Length: 247
Image (cartoon, helix red, strand yellow):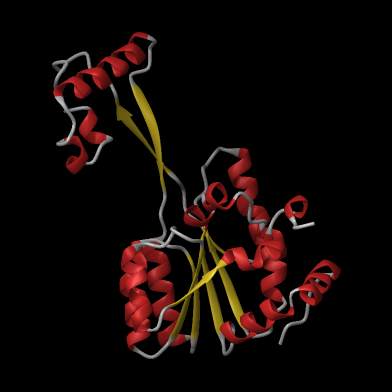
């Protein structure tokens, strides 16, 4: 079932045979993998190491039960690095799902609002927290924005591109039309709770590949319904940057 695609993977598999046996069980049956990269990439801050997409694909390709590895990531049109990254992902052999990143320009111009007004701040701070802030805190934050305004900064850019709908749809289509029995989701986003719950209800196997404290409570609650959570720390050496492999 496991046929290492590179000499390095062969060496690592000999060092960690228990990990390979565990994954052979997890990847048992016709398996599709769904990687929500915008959700996965920030994990490096918590993990202290980085996931290398090329090494990850070589590792996953070493399991003969994996039918497809679908990689979801936005493209920042006009940004050479972003466009090159998406092309590289396709070259590595992933089934790439992409769409343009939306650039939202949000005003931070406080020139027309009173110092104690939350009208600008409410675009950046959720209401439950904003209601807990004192008037003095609101005035302080507005003053900070005013200083930025005086420097010529009247707005900030927010990049938005999520694939929650697309991933959930693809998982259900693969179940309904492509005879997939085993679903591996790389994400901890609560928005996937509904499709995961439906798959479990229909007696499909679903495994979440994630890291500690990066799984939403909505998904964690599904463990009792059959969801299995695999900590990617266990396969660090197989998928991290080469310079980060454990010595």
